[in-house]
Image (cartoon, rainbow, N blue to C red; front, top):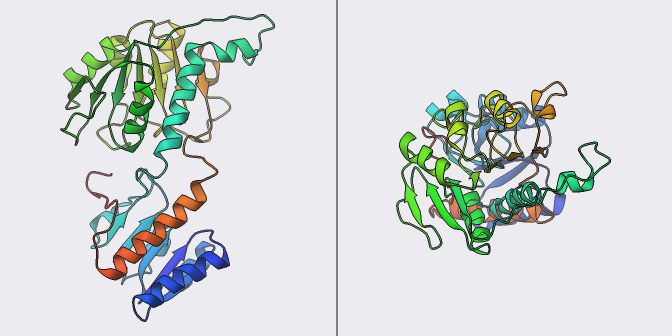
Amino acid sequence: MKILIYFNFSEEQIQTFQRIASEHGDHEVLHATNDDEAIRMALEAKVLIGLFPPAVCAVAPKLRWIQSHSAGMDNFLFPEIIERDVTVTNMAGLYASQGGEHAWALLLSLARGIPHTMGTDGRRAWKMPAVELTGSTLGIIALGGFGMEILKRAQGYDMTVLAVDLVRQDKPDGVAELKPPTSENLHDLLRRSDAVMIACPKTPETYHLIGEAELASMKKTAYLVNVTRGGIIDEVALVAALKNGEIAGAGLDVTEVEPTPPDSPLWDAPNLIITPHRAGASQHRPRKTFEFFCENLRRYLSGEELRNIVDKKRGF
């Protein structure tokens, strides 16, 4: 069996993949570093690890398993791959700890007025709002990998945590209320929360999940943070809500168009912090990615259940 790895791994790491392949049968590892190489190598591949653009998948008729390098799947599950008899696994949970840290960095910066204190908004005088988060109410939208890491950190602030989640039914320790993500439940969470953190994947159901009506439901003193995917928040509605003082501030690591265009109205919105889709970044990420790829390859070649199988119809 041919195993195509299309990712930026070192020669030593590729040798490790080959060793795993040899330990479980007469399998060959191919390594591509660009689309042209991947297309040339893909014809006989049954396994594709790393990147899987449509042009590569189209010339790989024997493909049976794809291991994605990404946790979010909204930009990768194109129609052909959804319909084909091919299993897709992702990196869900692998980048969650750093994502949780980034979400909290944004929230703490907003609450303690860090951008204003540092003068990064162009002022030459300090403007220092100071909001205490300890003992307040946090709303978390989805309790997957990012959501659970956000929850862990909320416990250190003695917060009352409200959550909605599409799949999870068991209430984790530290969550006061867990409900399905109906419109009624979402609006109830938004009305009661002093801060709201979005941790859900982007799917057709969550596109513009937070719009004008949802922002209007929030407290004027509340903060909104999103570190998962752009498009979950209606950015036109968000800018209006910030300019009209409907919410106290927002922190975004993701925007609907990335990188955020220079002419985006987000840049002129008050009390908004934008970072460039870096919540998943970490000095440990390359190692974690390599180790997870190795583990799932061992599982596949041994006939064991794969980790992080994606429901292609649901999109996560």
